[in-house]
Amino acid sequence: MHYVKVVLGVLLGVVVFLFLDYALPSKNTVRITNTYNRLTAVTSSNAIFYAADDAGTVENSAGQRDVRFIETVRPNGKVFVYRNEDTGWIWPPYFKYDSANLHAEATNLKSGKSDPTWVSVTAYGWRLPWLTAYPNAIAIDTLAGPDERPRNWAAMVICGFLLMLLALFWRMWAQFRERTIDPALKSVDDGWDRASDRVSAEATEASGRMRGWLDRVKGKPRK
Image (cartoon, rainbow, N blue to C red; front, side):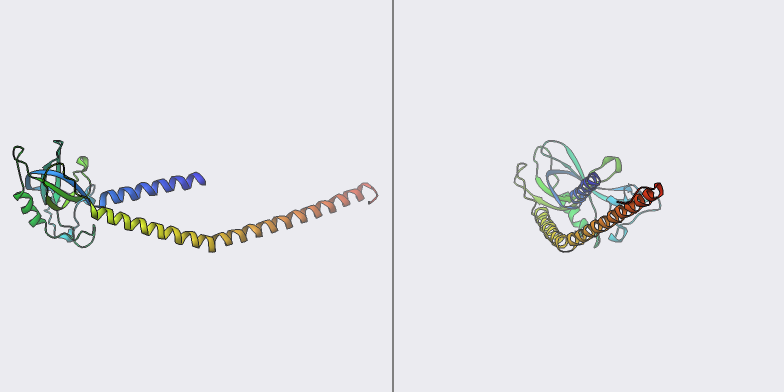
């Protein structure tokens, strides 16, 4: 049972980590190289990584959606692609409805390798090429240079708040266990011990009676 609890705890921790890693905003220093729209196939395998239907997205009869994209290059030369979709009011709770304005801003900040303009793109999500999934850009801020790394205050505040909730829940659970569960378990254990003692005593008494009956049958004098 101990190992089952450990495995379940590890699995729960992994799920929580992946959930936060996907949903929390991240910041990356990049240079925007291109912005464009493209018909993208949204299937059952990757629909979870795109905006919901109620966010104002439109799909054609072939299941393709007109999605805005932002192509970027990181300071180390690696390319990275963002999508730019509204999130709506449900999930994730970024309440983004300005994807058109963000697209125009990204287009205005395009720059070449010879005269780069470095920006910080705030986004959430994962880049999974095999699922055609892209992180969704939320905001763009200009930077002084490629070495500038803005602090991700939003993610830090959210993580701090979640840690406070976890500590509060842990304290409440400890008090509940101390006041309710532990006394109940102790009562059950005591009852089990009393029942075991009673059964043992009755078994001993029955064994003595059986031994006495056998002695009488064999004609042995009773002690």
